[in-house]
Length: 463
Image (cartoon, rainbow, N blue to C red; front, side):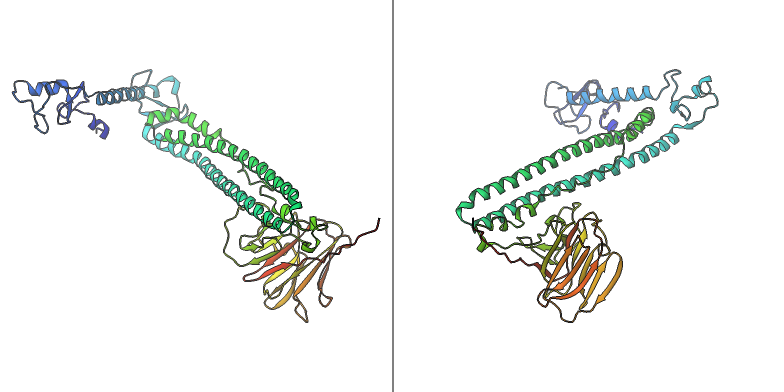
């Protein structure tokens, strides 16, 4: 049965592929010889199909159709030669499983194929196409995985831009409150921010360029292999071995991961900014003992502009899933402690669902993190203690504090929680903290936690 293309390239008179095609004024095409024979001994030169009179004196050639026909005939001749055995000029009807090549019936009985196994061409094509498709599947999955990683990289790069602009605005807003003589300090901090942004953006671009190259390489292999799957049977089988080798030569390496530290270190620029110039602006300065790290903030929390308050329970934000980020309603401090004594006060009332404590810097940050913290929690109207070594238990608290002081003494291995207004101990842990410990804050739905500033005293020593 002729293909649709062959029908389109066939003369409607002789029903064969056009030879020297001409086009009539009615736009129908015929072989020159066919139309001239049709007009022989006729006064009116009519189109053999629509019977419209040809208005031109000559028969203009249809070069476009002629080129298409020549290309079609060459391809058909090539396919016909591929279907024939080069040794015996017989049609390939079998596929030798031992030599992995199409053969004719004479080849089957030759000494070369003695005791070999054979399959009909159509069966071999079906089985080998299935094998090649199965071999191709891991590459396709790999390609999709790489595209997913690239999407994360794109999202991270976009978020870096948002972070950089937001940080820049915050820096400028704080510097507006200062006198003109701090202009040089402002310029220095902005330069540092932009240098970090440029460095990290360039690093991200380099990694994305390598990722694009890997995607392009795999895409080319996948396209070439898929093209082979659509080839004619014999052509497919002839190139099957090379196609399989091409696919198998592409190693399925582990997907690249978003590197730690890819985002802008906002806490470095905004944290304790006023304190660093307190000796000249002491009346405007508030020293915060802990600064929240927005790169660790969960997708459902919102941080204050000065990174000292966290509010939970909002809609999930579209943020990069970077390695530093912790659970949906939690956030970590920007600095950890592994020596010395450190304390910070947190306003907890009127929040009804929260926990405060410390979190090991090297601990896994995904999944159920409550089993990895030392903390005091408040939920269901009761106070609880949380630690990796003990199950959750209820604490007896006589009066609910509005503020809680967290004190971490790394040298003595003590972590205590108290009410600074009444100087009442709520709970104390004793543990040898070998890891650097990060302050951790969890704020549930419709709750908020505020880190309170420490009092600053200034004294002038005589010369």
